Image (tube, rainbow, N blue to C red; front, side, top):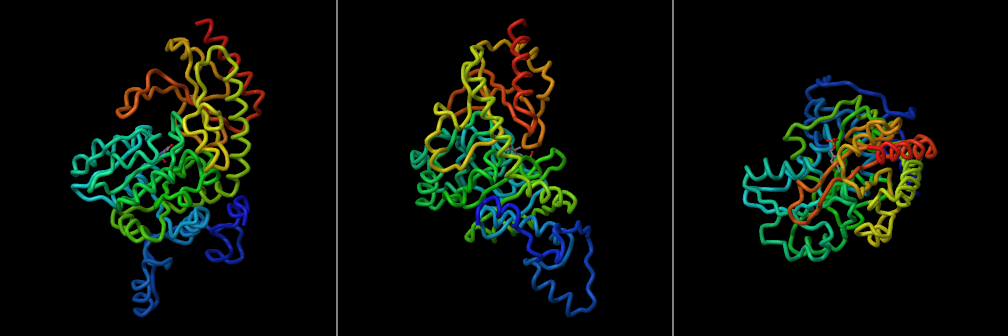
Length: 386
Ligand SMILES: *Cc1c(COP(=O)(O)O)cnc(C)c1O
């Protein structure tokens, strides 16, 4: 089955809602049983998809979990109330006091803060590594290295990591590999096929796809699933059926939306490349992006995101440019149908690599590319006049 067909069919097929295209939104906390025997049967099977208690989900959440498991080629999925709680939930499932973990220097900033502020307090040491380390990660692995975290492309700077090389080195030393695949989306990269043990998503972004719900997921391989599932349950994670429905609804159009948005993003990236105000364009499909060759080898496409670095780093000129955009609203997150822009500066949070100066991240929405280019053109008029 081709990927686009899988996106339409996964998690459906009448298992959770016979006769219906979409699984209904089942609201439930208490589940009631007719007999003691039925109650005991549910208790015995509570780790499977049986109605037991609301926190363990209803067919609405199970359908979403099944869809993601099928799409990623995993053994099972745990859902979380946000992408960040999927990251922290997955890490906490595998670590113990005294462990050491490796984090890419380009990691999503709140993940980094979790390591520095929470894991440190729990006696877990984090070493940040150059996202381009590849097989060289072996030099950083210690006897107590429990897991190697990866994220590719990096969410602001777009480095593409050599996951197969990192996974081979980590597995040789008994460490697990977690991958935050939010930026690449399930459409362009399948980390479990490239050596990851657990793939993590902020579903808030491309899967929900309409900027109206927050959710996360971790999809595990056979060897890691039980531990991930148990931790997810014991930490009390659960997601609302309404939000699970929105994620399922968003998922069905992911391929069409993202292909169009990726095409527009590439058009804009090439347009920026021609502008004399621009020093660098960071986009995995451009040959000068760190890891471009790995992207060509392992990925099936690019997405709606890219960043630019301007030659003139005047904050006032940048603000004049962004403040006046008609179609690019200033805001966090991405993956919705609307274009966004985010002023950022990674220099303050890098410790293993160096980065200097501000960058601007763009997210291409579903608007016509010509309107977006016109907006950007007027932006540079304000920039140059400031
Ligand atoms: C947004 C994002 C997250 C966090 O997801 P939330 O749903 O906002 O909690 C994690 N990782 C990456 C790469 C992201 O872009």
